Amino acid sequence: METCFLWGLSGRVVLPWDPSYNKDRQGFNRAAQSYPFIINYCQTPRDVSNAILWARRNGVEIRIRNGGHNYEGYSSGNGVLVIDVSDMTGIEMDEQAHTVRVQGGVTNKQLYEFVAAQGYPFPGGTCPTVGVCGYALGGGWGLSCRAFGLGCDSIEEIELVNYEGRVIRASSRINCDLFWALRGAGGGNFGVVTSVTFRLPPPVQRVTLIEIDYRHVDAKTQELFLWMWQQWLRQADNRMTLLARIYNSDADGLAALVRGIFYGEPEEAHAMLYGFLSIPGAVPSIESMSFLQAVARLGSAYPAYERFRAASRFVFRDFCPCEIREIVSLIQERPAGSVFAGISLYALGGQVAETGRDETAFFYRNAHYILWLESVFEENRFAAASSLWVSKRLGLLKSLTRGSYVNFPYAGLGDFKWEYFGAHEKRLELIKRKYDPRDVFTFPQGLARREKKAPFRLTQVPTVFGGTEFTVQAAKEKKNHRGFRYVSPQA
Ligand SMILES: Cc1cc2nc3c(=O)[nH]c(=O)nc-3n(C[C@H](O)[C@H](O)[C@H](O)COP(=O)(O)OP(=O)(O)OC[C@H]3O[C@@H](n4cnc5c(N)ncnc54)[C@H](O)[C@@H]3O)c2cc1C
Image 1 (cartoon, helix red, strand yellow):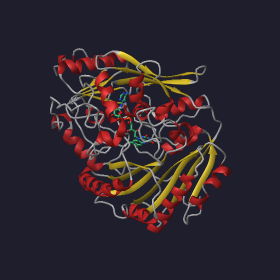
Image 2 (cartoon, helix red, strand yellow):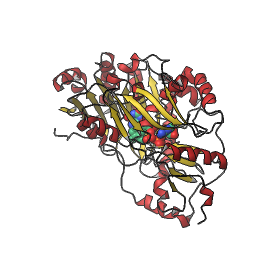
Image 3 (spheres, protein in one colour):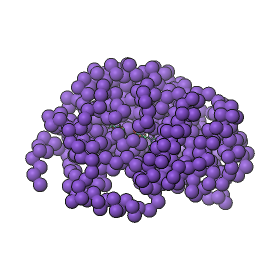
Image 4 (cartoon, helix red, strand yellow):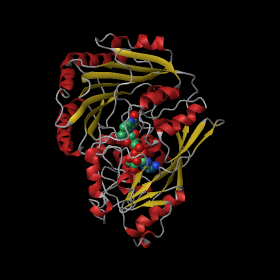
């Protein structure tokens, strides 16, 4: 195959006729399918720069990718050049400065293992294969956030390759406006981030991992559970961050769970969790362990990929019993083909709220928690049913909440810039115009003035390149969705 059109690119290149293309083009959410023109695995900032300049010369749209976990698949697209930084996995610690510098391709798991080996925790995310940069550029909620802030709150400096292919830096001293924007609205918008320097939290010996399960309960118990969540959050200790979920699944029927990390002893955690533990059917596991053991156990729940539709909202107030009943009613029926339908609650407050609303681009500092509605299915023919299910339920949720979390994006949002960035929208647009005046970095819900049309319309891989074969393989795949339980029912 003649490949001189690739002249100017460096690093590793995967094309539609390469054997690995079907694997390489896909992200975590297999419900989002797209067919890029070129996937360019970059090893250095120079490779990234070459890719940007090549795309501009050839009029090909760019997408930036690391872990591929964007819910809507916005780190790829049809006919685009994907600049993939997942080969750039260097990490270095400066103990004197109390910082850790990660290259653009590092994942949560890689960073956790590195810092934990030196005795440090890190305010990263729950899924081990999520990219640290993508996570922190969108804010970064994790089970240490009430103790140490969002992922973006620990950022000291960011290095990126800009629209001209030049390496630039952003920090509180240099390109301060860009630094502000990158912390909450940075993913895919301003350039390709090739490294981020984070301030380290204080070292820890041990943490308490919290797991409480309630399986095969009823809607009334789920209502009581949401009531307890509000009680807990009202007086929660900053050292404890929880994720709570009510759900309806093939495996567990109507159910609920709590997961969390507490920077303290299990006995103290027990007392703080009294409300949750008093709900009938609670099966708790509240154990002291190393930080690495805790995040590894939490991370073990995630499969290599899933198929889902989901939407997120921010909650700013307590709900009354009637509102709680309405929320619980949303998941009593699953859409056709759905194996799991749930509402997850991600606690905010604590150190998240200590940073001022206008100090970073992350707008919803004062929200109590993030609410996430989701339906998981095993075959893409059920995607439309789950999409409809989510969109029908969003009306009620919108009437009770405000805004959406950009790291949990939803394609169905009307005014998405307003939903993700609130009153920061206009300031972000100005910064976008200053640092990417030609809208070189675009995606369907990006800050660019308009989404460019891809000149290459590759919507399906021709059979000769393995497209049909892939379809057959997909149909044969076994179940692949989260195993939500870690504690044994007898525990
Ligand atoms: C199973 C699962 C669990 C998750 N858990 C959490 C969680 O606990 N907390 C949370 O806050 N979020 C969570 N997320 C969301 C996740 O943090 C975001 O989707 C994040 O942006 C993913 O980054 P990525 O590199 O893995 O994905 P990608 O799809 O590769 O990238 C996501 C976005 O960031 C941009 N981006 C990625 N790398 C760079 C870079 N180097 N330079 C510039 N832009 C870049 C991409 O262009 C894209 O817009 C979860 C997602 C999944 C699928």
